[in-house]
Length: 385
Image (cartoon, rainbow, N blue to C red; front, side, top):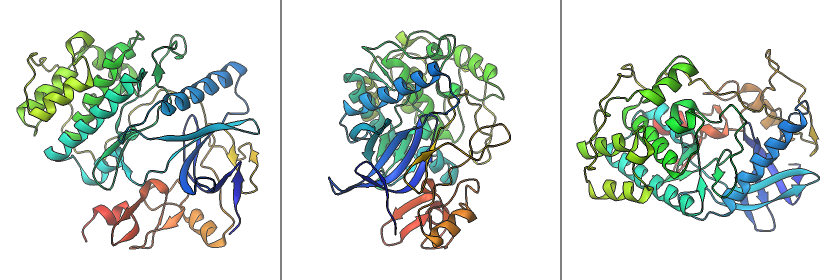
């Protein structure tokens, strides 16, 4: 098989894309290890100010991650620039994100919730001690490992406390349903905003539904600032109390550190602060079939890494003018045919390999390594044997 090179790295396949750039599975021959390689992609039509902001955001993520070393935080291995294209490499995580885990299996059990809360409190305690506020804690940015542990990732809008916020004037970045009231209001944030977002995330993991629902961004942001959801059903009273304390609108009434919150979870202790009275009830429905949350507009993705090893602008765009899924295909006829067929669960995403059990093509986000069963899709992993 031909090799696509990016600096010293050997690109194997595209793993995903986002507002910040493209992520590839790659091999680092110097360290003899597989890595996830994130390469910044800038829309060729973006204004100079937009390009500058995106570069600052990309570099901020790399700086934030390089200062961290914790088992529950994704680890950055290297960062640099190749022919003017900025990148950083991270440990390659073989797991599934919390969003997909909920969609395929439903809410987590109480023991799973306790472990998730302790892992993420540990991650937040570490990053906060390093002067980093994540600002985007949500199910999409939490990876669940085969051993059941959790890793916090995607520090694209993280803020280093010693630096000024880079949020655009008059706007904000992130997913409104997971943002703290002070974030939505455009006020200054500190470590307690992550504690609020963590509680929102755990609430969803425990109930299978979002704590803040709405059919538009204005409805969601109004509820974030002014309304409280009911205590999550199905959890022990002490966990209900812990989450509701972390969801207080006033940061001064929340847990003042992730370590204090973890101590209450670990000891099964009811917090002393009274729980707020709920203002509304989210619709009673399971996680499956929930409509996607309205998202704040963000920077469009940029150029892709073509099979020739060179960057080139997008040639395919959607009806709205937004670049479509990359056509990055390694030079292999069999793989090219699989990618044309598309992933079984995400037809719009080109597949990279086939499930060892059912034979259907699957994209990276649907790929799981299960001991004794090989590399299989989530449908087979989570479905009946």
